[in-house]
Image (cartoon, rainbow, N blue to C red; front, side, top):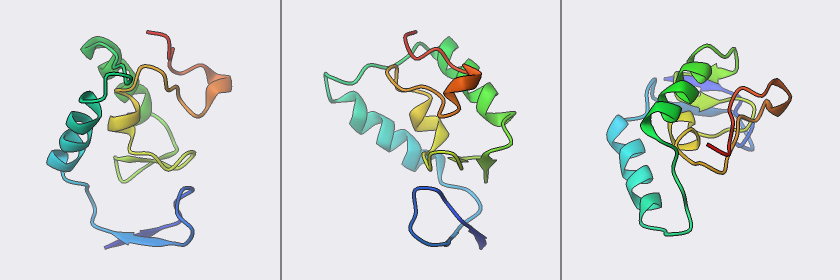
Length: 94
């Protein structure tokens, strides 16, 4: 178990080292059923994930400590950007 203070959590959380990839894929699949939610291309998605992997705020390889999201989900959503917006790491319009 790993304990960390997550920005989106009210208290320190204890979690397994890694969130299962299947759980993240299931969440993305559920989001894809909503016609109002748009996704980025695979190329943009991979670029965004690369930026996250190099970020000092990535925790456990899955969680952004700036906003508390799972980066693999946030990176897939077209209308969301990196929470470090002043650094312009992502272009949410792509």
